[in-house]
Amino acid sequence: MINKQSVWFVTLFSLILVLSIYYVTMKDSSLAAILENNNSNTTVPVNVDVEESSLLVSLRVSEDESVLKEMENYQSILMDTTKTTEEKNNAYNSLMALQTKKSDEEKIEKKIKETYQLDSFAKISKDTISIVIASTDHSNTLANNIIRSVQELFDEEKYITVKFQNA
Image (cartoon, rainbow, N blue to C red; front, side, top):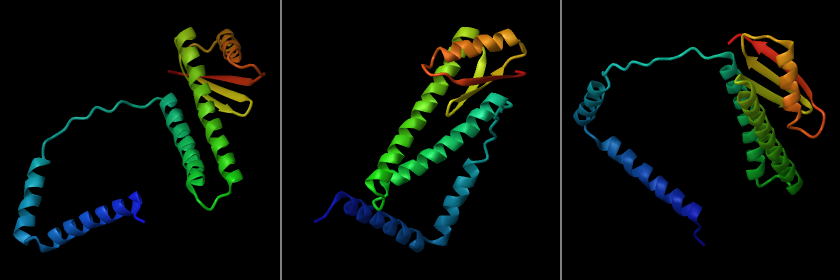
């Protein structure tokens, strides 16, 4: 019986085969003309303005990379046909926990932005929440207020730390 996967494989393989034969049988002069046209079109100067990234952006990027690696790992377990149902269930639950954690971190950052008009980065690890605030104001009162407002988002007690970094 022919399935979709086999049909797609044969189709793509045929396409690659036809393109390979076309490339091999092309005359050298035709190939040189194509390469010259491509080179002449790519000499247009482009101005790119790159802003210096902040500490919060670098923290977010590194966190996102680690989360993506974990997600890929769990997804590969889910797609692996040799894994047991229990292993797949554990991977699925871990994947859902990762998404919940990411959602909670975004809620914390949104609440801080709405309440205090401050940019922040939040990271949740088990019952610990670490918050980095981009602000020149390093007030203990502000830190306590942020801790209280973040704790309101959760039913269970969390250990919350607030760290200030110059914006």
